[in-house]
Image (tube, one colour):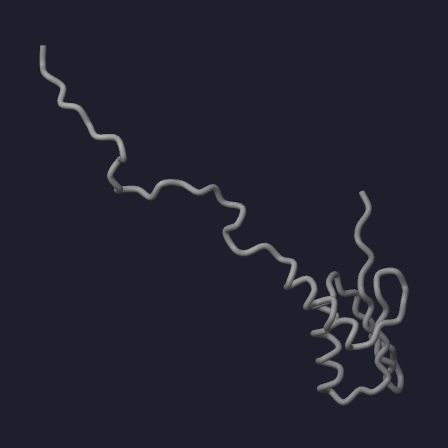
Length: 96
């Protein structure tokens, strides 16, 4: 079984390097925002194929994923709601 390669978000601090392996572009974008909010400047993002990514690349990937997602409930079968009248009239049955 193979697992998908992660997005890597890394920041170099004065005495240590912090690395996050993020499973999705959305997660990587969230970590990038957290590092930026903390005031870090040396942030490196690497995609699943090892290519360097910019913040705009992550935005595009996240937006593309949202645009191509199916609408909620699209996989459900259409059924007749409970408690509605039948289109076929019922016959009166006589007791024999």
